[in-house]
Each structure stands twice: as C-alpha cells, then as structure tokens.
Image (cartoon, rainbow, N blue to C red):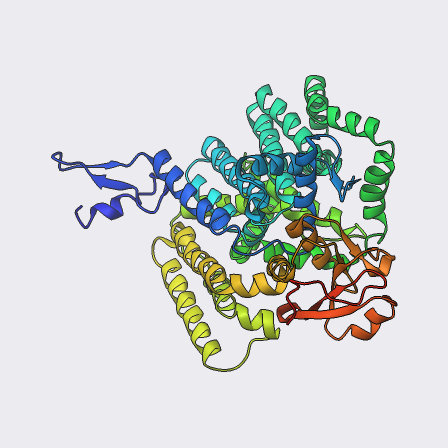
Length: 576
C-alpha cells in the first residue's frame, strides 16, 4: 500500500467505519474499500466475544441474586415447568420468567454450570450491541460501528453482561423497543411500531410493568419537548397493543391461575411496595443514580456528558427557532438517558441495575456527537481530551491493583502502585496525543478501546482468583464437599445470605438457617463465622459439634453437627 493511500481513506466524504478500511487491489494498482459489513461483523464479534463471553465462569456466582436466579431456572428445568418459578421447591414470584426461560435453554444445552447461567446475559448484551449497530447504520450511517463498540465497552454493559441478572434482558429488549419506536417516528413504517410493541411485551416478561410504563414516560416527555402532543395518540395503535398482549399476557394469566398470590406478591409487593417503600432495605440517597450512571458509562463518561450538553444546546436553539436542526434524535436521546435516572431516583428502593436501560442512550448520544464533530475535522477540546484520557486510563491502574483493593480495601503505597500508575499515565498521555492529532474524534473509539481491553484482561487474569475466593461460594462448596463421607444436609448460622444462596446453587440443596429455627433433625454440616463456637453450642444442646476447618478468604468455619444423642464423629469425616 502506498504511504499516502492510508490518508485517502479519511477523506471527509468517506465514513470512518473500521480501524482499517482499504487494501490494495492486486494487479490493478488501485485501492478499494474492504467489505465494511464483514469487517464490522468480525470486529464486533471479536470485541463482544472477549468482553462478554471469554472466561465467563472465571469467577463463581457472586452476591445473592446470581445463585438464586440460577437455582430457580434449574428447578424449573428439573420440573419441566415453564410457568411457576420456584426456589427450594416453593413458588418464587419476585420476577417474570424471561431470564429463567433463557437459562433453562442454556442448562439444557450445556448442563447446569455457573457460566451457562450467565450465558443469557452475554447473548442479550450482544443482541443489544447488534441492535445499536443496525439502527445507526440504517438511520445515522457513518459511525455506526463506533456506536456499537461504545455500547459494548461501557462498564455497566460489560458488568451486567457477565452476571446472572434480569436487568440485561430488560435493557436489551427495552432498547430495541425504543429504537423501533424512534424508527417509526422518523420513517413512518408501521412495521417499526409493531416491533416496538412486541419488544415491550418481551420487556414485560423480563421485569414486569416497569417496561411499558418507562417507555410511555419517555415518549410522553419527548412529545412534550417536541411540542407534538398528537404523537401520543399516534403511538396508541390498537394492532400494536394486541401484539403486546399476545406476547406478554399468556404467562401472566397462567401464573396467576396456578398461583393465586401472584398479583399480591409480584405487583403489590415487588413493584409498588418496592418503589414506594424501603420494604427490601435498598435505601439510598436521592442522587444515588447520578454517580451510578457516570460509572456505568466508563470509560466514555466525559464525552457522553459533552455529547449530552451539545444535544441540549441543539434542542434549545431549535426551540428558540434560531435554526431548525431537522434531527429529533438530538432531543430523543437525552430524554431517554435522563428520564430513567429521574424516575428511579424517586424510588425508595435503589439498585444499580435499575438504570441499565439508560446506558445505550449515552452510547448513541456519543456516536451522534462524534458524527457531528468529525464532519468538521475538529480536534476535541483540550480540557475534554485531558479528562477523557485520565478517566479512560484509571480503570487500567485499578485492574492491576485489584488484589489489594479486594483484600486490603485500599491502594497501598509501594512499587506495585508506582508501576501500575506509571502504566496508566503512559496510556493517558498516548490517548491525549492521539486525540489531538488531525484525526481527532475519529480515533476516539480506537484509543479508548485499548485500555478497556487491557483492563479486562488484567481483571480476568489477576483479579479472577481473588474475586472467586472472596466473593463466591464456589470454592467453599468444594472445600465442604471434600470433607464429607456422604452428602449431608447443610445449614448456616449468622453467615451472609450470599453464602446461603451460593451454597444452595453449588450443592443443589436447600440450605437451612439456624436463626430461622431451621436446625436439621439429623446430623448435618454447619457454616458459621470464625469464632462462633460458643454461640453454636447454645443452639445445639445434646449434640456433638466437631470443628472441621476454616475457609479463610471469607472468614468462615465449617462444622459437623451430630444427631441428638450421638457423640461419635462418623468414619470418613475429614477433620482438620
């Protein structure tokens, strides 16, 4: 390839759609574009494969929700029941079934494994990236690959793509629904409006009535912003409502028939009471979701904020009739980004995953901002460049120091911090220099994806073992299994509920809890915090309690507890 041929690919009339866009044509002496859809597909598949799927089981299931949701899907599959979610054999009516259905299929194909439980989220996140790509390619071509990869590499998207969660299915189908609605708004084709209602129905199966309610709220605010009240009546389309009902209602009717308590438990408790009260002890300050949103958009946060302000500027100038932008997307995306933040800030129960459906709007805002700015070959503002370079590089330092952060809850002074900080500083300088070249924002995606990939690799290589030992019950379940001569009932005492649900999944058995009076009648194993012998003795009068060992990463001991009146430890019990 001639040295000047590379620069020809950046002519302002030619969209910058891939890292490398041209090759020499053998024998012709000329240049031609590579098939961009194929290159885009390969790049997207590579990034999604690494960010979402690679070493998906490198860390065991963490928290309470991951093993709990996975166990619900396992029990539904074992009973061949696609209607009633159960946990420990009892109806578990907190969430609709879309994730459970996906996990059941994954378990059927690959067996019941923790990585298979996470597979639906990884697949859903990939579909989300594909949806963003095709929307931009159809309606805002030029930087559609940028928009897709920005979406894929946002911290919140990566985190939930690698977790057992009902939030990722909701975010994916909700995003597709809103993209379809805006496509109908701009294009007028009813097939897009039909898709909007179908995917809203799937959203209702993913997490309940919050999907149609939030979509209606976003459309309402957008209609008010655009001063198009009639838009609400145009959206209210009877055939679409029927499609929504066909998708969403059959399961709701069936589960209500089988479980008369469903409406009370799911609608009244886990939707209305969760929003209006602190019933489930997730109280956070009103401003909680603002930092969550900014963290979820890392490493793109700085430029997303700039894109948001630029879109608001365009909308305000349009509103004042200073000029007509003829681009309502500049108004729609900020509404989509901000309405969920405001809405869920009013909730008395707050969890980070609530605003996951807002993150794609931030990625789309940035893609649109790049498209507008890059058309003028403008270098990004020096302050924006500096802030973005620092924000993009810092996660690399944190990933290299993850062991200290998890085990010591601090960044220790010393050689390790100096090396990781120096590496991050070099990355930041490289990013800043690149963005200040003539290519400017056209290189934003490339230089920002480098630290994302490096940070992810460091987390998976360095952080996975320590995170697995300290946050998951997988290794604990293996240690407990090794001391058993036969599989025994298992109970916990004053152990975190994350341990209880984690052991329930990895041992596939109901875990009793002493505090609830659930003390097995026969011999069993017991997990308790270190130094709990005296408190255990007070609840096991007339039984022998034998210390078996300790699981130091989580500060837990495990014991054998005899049946009443039995004093001899059974043969084969491995005591340490």
